[in-house]
Image 1 (cartoon, one colour):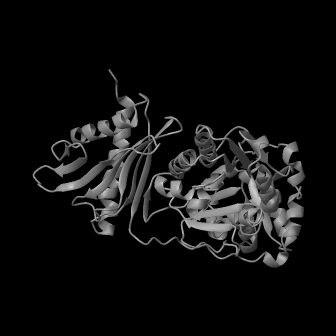
Image 2: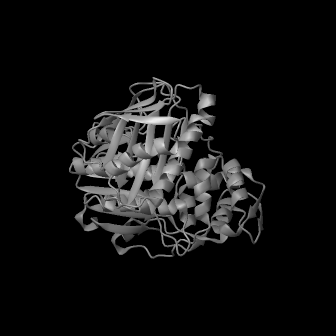
Image 3: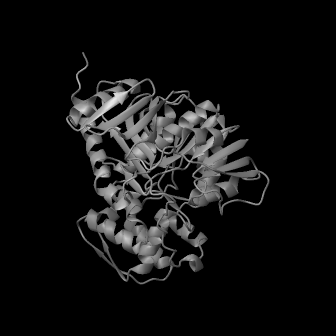
Length: 454
């Protein structure tokens, strides 16, 4: 089979490539043009792919039998990002799902997260929303819901390891008493190997766990014992989530953007579930202790700090979810925006429209602030798209677009600006035009909430 893996350059992707390559023809997708995960075998192909671009994903998925989706977007994707990771996840998953439909992909395999008992977090809710996107695209989908994935190089395990290595003493807030579930990376890739292309697992959701009952406090203590580290641990009966995010980021040596949603999830109790009979033969590490024994103590050294992502251009991405209680289609939403904006910023901005070009103009100024060209919807995306083709506020005539998009059969409405390059100096743009844009989009969302359709 031809298996395409989105998110192939990450920790799980690296191990999954090694597991599947040679058995199947594997194609890895990632942002960079090259990958250190590339095996020296003819059956592996690497492609640079922009998941924000439907066309890029569509091209990258050609001839694919099974598409594996390992992407989670908690780190920024542009020099300036406005929005939330959960809205970004919706856009990326929607692009991927519809590109799979266009390429007649036979199966999608998605790695999500376990659903907590009771209270959940934004991070875990986002995983469920992505599941929803794939389940509504009509392609047989296999959902793998995993807890913490243990293995040298995995983000959650690296944070845990660094905390134990860096701290001579540790406060244990209430969230360290929360239940969690684990799976070792080798067991996880064995499960992937079993489910890809297997009709038995089409349209199924599997909890990927080792079956052990464990808390975060136990993980911390077992890790310290394994490496022979004496660490004073002081339980406290409160959560201190804000403080926890800071010290987990600092001493766990990970970006705050990554740590914050993970810490919010730690207060949730993950369900204690038995290992599914269909995948029981893949679970070779039933305890955290057996997982630690697999990882040599020689590897328990401080990992390199995450490198701050560098962006070639000073580009802007802004993604907002819109309330759409009237269930307007995207043509109507886009037209409402064009009609609403000059009324909202009256006596300042007006809009000129013809069949293709939309121009935003400042009253008393002949030149456009921004010029947009409406693009005909030739794909199967439910969206209205405008390319940014000029104007005084744009630093480019051939990059950037504005789009209004419906996701998961219209359950979610997203407005986004992508790859925009401002003309204003960067320090000025950030505190003027960027702030105004966000204010305008929030005001438009309020307008849609109160819009009455006659």
